[in-house]
Image: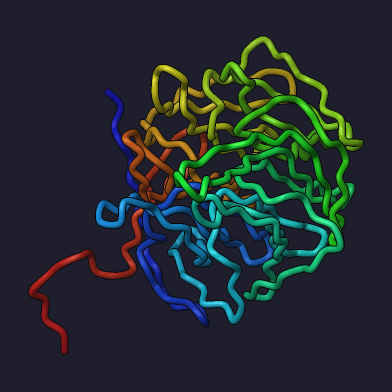
Length: 344
């Protein structure tokens, strides 16, 4: 039986306009990107655990930064509305986070565009925009200077019965920094889409599941068209998976997904441009889906935050994937939870 590893790190200082905390609260479908200039992960939003009292979960709009030593919450002058399942990526040409849409409340989605730079959020009022949606795939192409999104879900609620229904979208849009342009009205029938830019091969990749829940992947031709890739081996599960490109070995990392009929998976796969390889990690990972994940190019490690475990329970764990193995981050910068303490 494999053991769980724990990564102990200490914090030293507090940043301006921030609050020292162990880590973000339990959540799922938050989004996170890595800012290479600041050397920090930037996380926004997500959905809380299910509240037994009110019988619902809640969307969040808090901003957090992680430098592999500690988490810090940022209290920005401007804050976007609450959301989860938004598309979010790092715009390396303009040194900023770009974010679109997300789930705002039951039966309510967003189609607004925001950027995060200089420690504040700013909304961009675009002449055109994709329709309201959440759980769309999104990634930034630095060569073409385009933020690309694909598909997602649109949820509506019947005002009389309060029942919700979901429509799946398969269109492709590009954001040039000023406005959105629809590249195609319909594409492959891929649900739970995850987009990732493969910088080693200059390719935008789409990974998700088809209408029969089988794992599929496609390559973008930069004109709104998607060509299916059929490698010898595909990840067993790709529903609600987390993906990121790893610069240290030029592979796409995929982990955390829901398998139809067999529950949550803790498998780790790496794509080298030709095949997917199942990584045999010495340490077990949490079996989660819907986690926020991004790759730290400075420390050559992937950081995964939160997600949902079996039984639909959101968690607050921060996991580090490095050198083919997992470790759990534990912040020792503040005392652990306790009662009956003394303070002078």
